Length: 172
Image 1 (cartoon, one colour):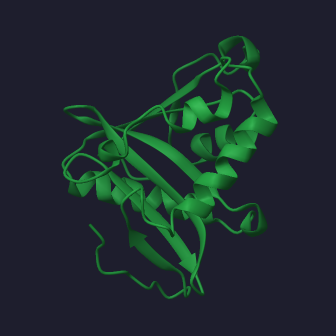
Image 2: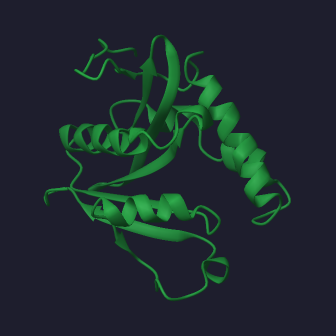
């Protein structure tokens, strides 16, 4: 299901798309390369490919999930998704900014779009995990009101899956 795109004042276009849409593919491809580069087989022998195929595409479709892409001049530059975690909670997945477009606040924009959509879908909380070798992701979540569900003073490599949550009733 493709919804009507919104064009914010910044000139960026926000699209809600199915996982199989070709406009999603460039970001997923680069995300797989990034996972493989940062983690190799750190988590399992299946590595990045296993992680990218862990969830069926249908889990990111309405009514319980969503996937958004931000485009600039027809190019997919950032995106992310959520799926149902439990009745009240959506789990954020695949939040990504293309390497050529980082340091522009696009990941923060993706988070805001996903949070707004999750609220519209009736979710009251968000949950996510990130890996120990993604300090920029950890910092993004902490700076946008997510609560760490792990000891921030512990070695991230020992924790492995850095979990966060956010109450959607609270302002960002």
